[in-house]
Length: 266
Image (tube, rainbow, N blue to C red; front, side, top):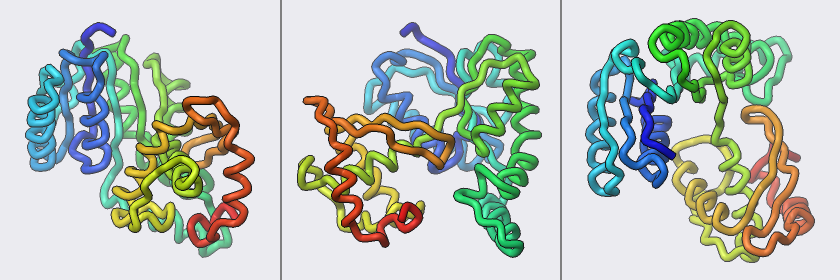
């Protein structure tokens, strides 16, 4: 792949920013490309820029790294725009999206993706997303928008319907599937499971341990999946080296597994 110009908007996030920077700088195909980090929070942006510059040096990735708080300064010449934004206070609004519908008997698998909670988040997130999209139409009309902003399917659908920008939605939820299979089949696959990995609940106390198991499992198995963001079905589980179908064994182990590990699937 030739050298490209990548813009990451929302790069000050300690989750999205770190994951995006690590993924891009680890890529052999992208070595020597340009990466511009964008965030409205100048303090967190500065910290993430320093981290990116250090990783770029240590990993010898050869990127040209820039940063700015202004989207219109970053977009000219961009080939790819990676987007993950959300109005503040993020956690408080998520809680309201869940709790308010619940008062009226409406339960949602993930309020950010479906039901009235998903609608509320769409109405909050879509205006700033479309503002960025309009700037892309003027400043980098041929660029791909790689979207992580939720509600994933609603945001991508709106961009596809109401703009000329090419858009693709990505979610790292499949990583949780690898972690679940890796934990349940840890003995058969030879995976070291940290003691801290006790559930699939999204919380800092679980994240590092879950990521460790997920990364190990990706070297051992291949998963085929389909669905929508945060609501995914595993269609196949195969040994990465032999191609053996591991789904029957996983199903057997899962049926006998502690239901507290992932209660929503029971």
